[in-house]
Length: 114
Image (tube, rainbow, N blue to C red; front, side, top):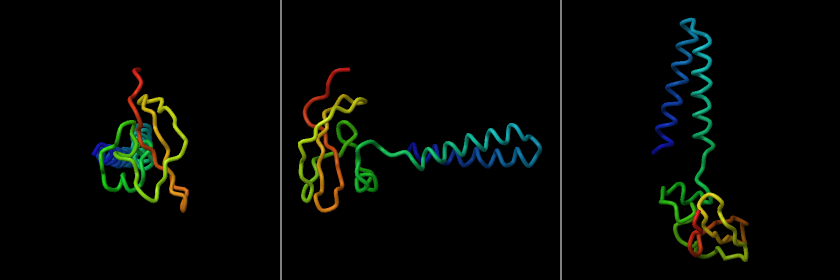
C-alpha cells in the first residue's frame, strides 16, 4: 500500500515538475521532477528483505525477521547456514532448492534484544 502511495505521489511530483518547467519556473520544476523521479525509481527497486517472489506477489505478511511466513516445503531443503539479521535481531535459516539454486529465509528461535 505504501509503495502505491509513494509511486503515485512521485508521478504527480514529476508532472508538477514538467508543468513548472513549461511555465518558466526552471529551477523549481527540475527539482520537483528529479525528486518525483527518485521516488518512482525507489518504489520500482524496493523489495522486502529475505522474501521470495511468490510471497511478494501473494502479498502475504512477512514472517519474523522479514523472511518467509513459514518454512518453505519441498523442494526446498534447510542448509547449515544461519545468520543474524542486523535489523530485526532474528536468527534466519537459509533454505535452498537444489534444482534451481533459489534461496529462501525463515526465522528460527527468538530474536535478540536490541
